[in-house]
Image (cartoon, rainbow, N blue to C red; front, side):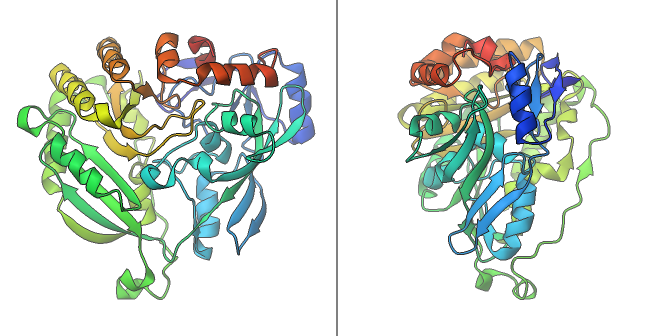
Length: 439
């Protein structure tokens, strides 16, 4: 079937394989010369596509065990994040790190080593995995943790599915009192104020900012920053205190068709940005977890807004010392180009883990652009700025980076390649992305 990532660029005709059980998975794996595993298809580019064989493990979606004292959850890799939340939040447990969408699988979260709005304090998702079960290219199953097969454990968390098939994992869940977030909204006037607001928010559990990508001059880098904490029961409105862990299900609206290409242009996005900034009222409020963590999940198929040709999400991180200058250069180029970035999200990251995991201590900015020739030209310019400031691009969002930039951005790349070769000497695990990048 024709597959693509969430960005709908590129497309590839892939042969899909869906093994029913572990024995079927092993048999299929042994007879395929080249394969990659695909979760729920929410990586943006070509990292979960292999034309020869793309394995779906969505049917491996069982909870194996849960310890209500320690919060340790053992689950299969095909479990979806909403199933975890809807099962365990009513019991007072929440996922320790979550990306901006909940429509992802446990295996995909590990392979991409997703980060969230709390990376500055909690690290990435891989930091909360106690152990995982990995099937190698020869069908052998290894248990990996900090105490057993540690190097393979490190390489798999963020390894984009290139070390083997993640069968299951044990996650350390986070105890909460309610299903709500106490959110404080801050509006800043420029990049200096934005970065200062992030620095003052280091003591908060969560912090994320929508940033105006088309603002120029004195308004460059202005944002609306949302910082949050899991609300205590006594902080909830009176009517919610009797059932603090209950939230009414949200009915998503749907984008029913592909928008015309000209819908998102400099002027429509400029108007949206101006309105969004103007209506954001500073202050504190109590909102449900869905609204805080997954605002875009309220719009099903929102990727169709960018039209049939799809879009590219460009997410990079810059070291702390280079962030102010690098972000200024990039946002100046984006605003000057006038290429519409409908969604622009800024976060502060803490210390990274190495290998192919994306985060490093500094600022990460995610920008969405329609997949046009003009966008490719702009992103080539932005690549040069990111490289010059010692940054790197997130593999889970990438659809067009070159091998040289990967080499410069990921200092432990050669160590990853060596470890991967030892676990998979024939190079069975491959994706279109890994072949493009020489991984």
